[in-house]
Length: 149
Image (cartoon, rainbow, N blue to C red; front, top):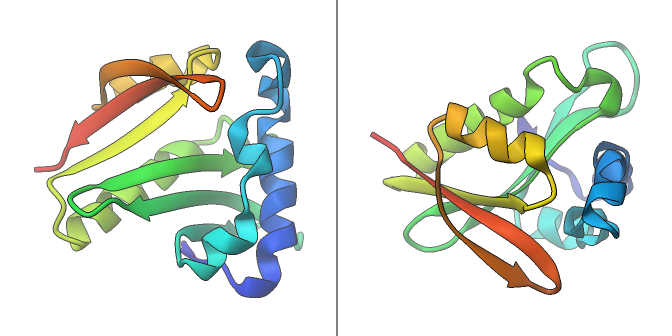
């Protein structure tokens, strides 16, 4: 994993677009990460990426980590569609948890769209606990937290 470079905003946008396309029907519109300002995330130092290992120039995966003062927030997790199901999401979350520990945080938080049933099932298996639900910007979100010990 590495921080994304400023010249990679379009590549990050393409990765996120492809990764979240499968969720459009369930959500009923484009999921929020598809319309995020990836250049701004890169400039803020929040966007991390993993290069593809298959010799293609496309990125394999990405994650957005936001420092919220007393905890780290996972804002977006994306893996190239042809690589999904191979553990990249789990690797990204492990990286996020390690980064949160490195920064001295005792917990990490994330949210997912309530219509993304696979995420809602996966996060508890990785030690995350649902803490609530909210609607923000018209999106119904499920909130999760994981203590880091």
